[in-house]
Image (cartoon, rainbow, N blue to C red; front, side):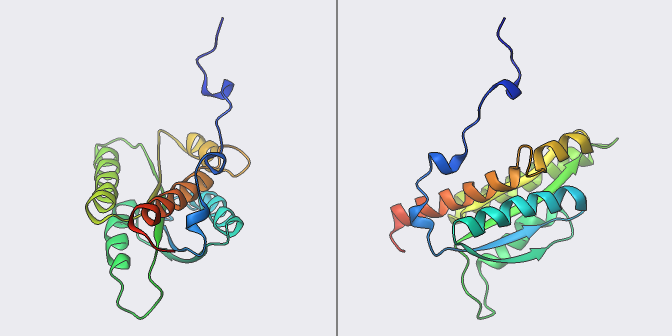
Length: 171
């Protein structure tokens, strides 16, 4: 009898099917909401290893929590400090379900805020905010030797940078 478990599927690494050549020379901001440090450290590790693998330079900044990620991306996208402009953004964090509706509000508004920036401002944003029931689920997704969602998020960002450059021109 066939299994319905995702564990039985070989999920492709996005690097196998995304055209990432246009992302060469990109500069990315990696934003981390480190409330659950062990989890976000693993996400960050996977993302940084992937950015390094593709020769992408990056800067890093921490924010207070997942809810602050959209505002931080918006501010960084319009930076005026003389620093190098960002081609994309990798957002990392974790929200674990608690006893109140706070979880739902944070998850929905963080996702909506980042998607609004992606759609309305044309930003290349990798969404790496894990929304899990418990710490065990989050660690399974975050760890680089397991599901390595940090890598997936970095690849998604690089894929969107490539797509922006394809349709808008540019290096």
